Amino acid sequence: MFKRIQGLQIEQQIELLTRELIEIQSYSGTNGEIHKAEWLFNFLQSFSYYQVHPDHLIIREIENDSYERKNVFALLKSPKNTTKTVIYFAHFDTVGTEDFGSIQAIAHNPDALEKYFSTYKSDEDVMADAQSGEWLFGRGSLDMQSGVAVHVANLLYFSEHLDELDGNILVMFNPDEERQHTGIRGALSELIRLKEKYALEYVAALNNDLISPLYPEDSNKYIYTGTAGKLLPCFAVFGREAHVGESLSGIDPTTIASEINLRINQNLDLVEKIEGELVLPPSCLYFRDDKKQYNVQTALSARLYFNYFYYEKTPHAVLDGLAKIAEEACHEFEARLKTSYSEFVKLNQLPKRDLSWTVEVTTLENYIGYLQGLRINEIDRIIEGFQNTDLDEREAAYEIVDALQKLDPEKKPRVIIFYAPPFLPSNYLNLNNERGSSLSEKIQAVLEKEATETGEIFKLRKYFPYLSDGSFLSFEDSEEEIRSLKRNFPALDTLFPIPLEKMKELNIPSINVGVYGKDAHKWTERVYKPYSFGYLPRLIREITRALLQD
Image (cartoon, rainbow, N blue to C red):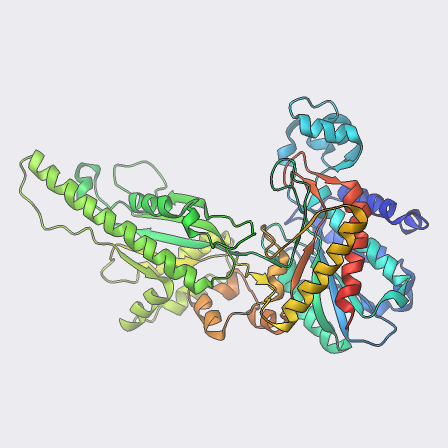
């Protein structure tokens, strides 16, 4: 493959590499991820630089990964003996191809897809793009085999033009971005090891994950100096079961869960208002009760969780806000049931009974404190019982909380709020300090110059609005915030090991200068070649040079 790209223009190199990478299937959670890591490692070995410096090219198996996947690192040292280092990173896994339906067999064949979509009259935009010849189709074309190819081509360029570098480049390719971010989480130890071994100063990390139009006819190219955080707040709702013939005497957890869902799901009032940024509301990703089969007993418990993007808030502040919402939902539920019960006994001329519909709302941390106050000593045993489990990580978290609820001698109806995997911290440039403002100014200067020369319109934004591995390169919250997160995240170290201390130590800004295209994660996924293969590589090189300058 290396011989095939030698002598080609860089945009030709990138297209050829992208096509090759698309053909190599690397779905998240499959052996294909191992194969692609090894392919990248073997390809980079062909570079003259790594034949002279083989120790600068590393493939490292991820610790405790059941799939035995690997990260790839390629260090390029400047001859100017400087410590300043820019990281390039990208993920090489993709989602599956089930969405291609009847044409799944050609999901990794860009030419066959272009031919198919060139007569696809059901979507005129897709058909026009296919007929233009300017778009490359295929699973992973946009997210993000083209991004990997751009980094590889730029690494090759700089390895042959070392005199242009005022600092070092460290390229990192990771698996499992699409699911659990296992690759980047496992890479942090190696980043620290390389930093110490070669005395590297990480200036910033450049990702080139996808960017897309935000609305029809949007031709802006968005550059992001950070990435949004993601939380998965979970609600375990425990009620009081009843026969349907006496349903008003029970506490139906599905009703409470519904009240909570109505108050949180797609609620724009919960979005942090940040001028100029694309900010997204919470979305319900899971909602069901505990019933396994039909009977005439009401449910005992219900579960729901949300995708929750956050930006400048802390996880603790988000949890406090959600607890207040749950309390409001439970108070309204209690008031409505009291009224309904009064009308019921009046309608049926029955004597009133002394019933309560009070539902307690608590965080996991406070609930465990309550159990400890009762001197219940089985808490650690329950949590440790999930050290090795085949359950989905979120299911395992709920099972832990269920087991803890059963320890309560009173079995009070309650809502327990906690976090489950995955957790992605927000990572953004702080423009109020010298480091953040300097990096932002350097990037802005490059964008202004490139806009003049290319005619492109660049928009500098603070938060990459989608999920990104860049979240794991920094964690700036306090030690108390770390402790709070762990106390409200059942079995964090087992279900979703996240080295917050290492992230805090690295503290690397994540800049996204992405490939441009449409329909990521859809069967019509495609990357725009003139920008992504033509303009983008130079833009990344120019930003790299600017960041490495004193």
